[in-house]
Amino acid sequence: MPPAQPSESWWRLNATLPNAITVVRIVLIGVFVVLLVRHQDAWAITALAVAGLSDFVDGYLARRLGQVSDLGRMLDPAADRLLTVAVVVGLAWREIIPWWLVVALLARDAVMVVALLWLARRRLQTPTVTFLGKSATAALYVFLPLSYLAFGRWDTVHTVALVGATVAAVVYWGSAVQYLSQARRAGSVTASTP
Image 1 (tube, helix red, strand yellow):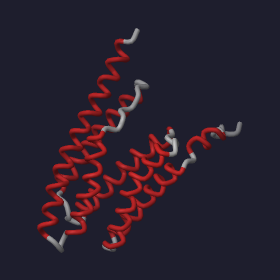
Image 2 (cartoon, rainbow, N blue to C red):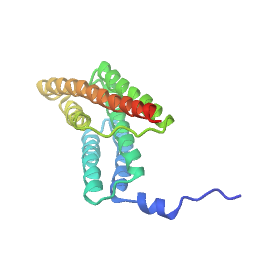
Image 3 (cartoon, helix red, strand yellow):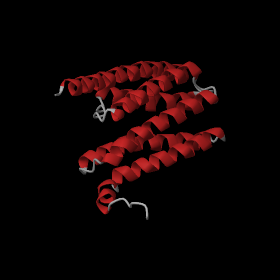
């Protein structure tokens, strides 16, 4: 028996410009890692800047063009997390940021993965993106590349970037608290529904 093929309507609903931009962002993450490892810093920063910019472009276009899709709802946060992991691990590996910052950011993402799996197992709606979460991500997209750019060139700017990234990490955890609160409410509503 041949395997089931995805329906044409699924492809039509999910083959959107915002989703294509998200896929390009995922590819750019790999490009960034290769360039970072090879110490081709100018190109690595360029790939990182384009990847970061694409995060805002795809979301804007999805809303503006009415092309919000199920695939996009999965791909976009996955690309965000993948970019965060690649950047923080890569920068720590190059000794540009401290490893404790990596642990703080990745621990937050691990908590969120557990929460999302819990929601999926109970077939509950995933939390909606909050302003705090988007702000923290945007701040990380500014301060982490800035720390990379300033490292070994401008010590004061590098220090400011590390302080900014630390504050962004605290806000990042604050957004996790918001998401977990949404998840708890979703679980409470489902439990109380007859």
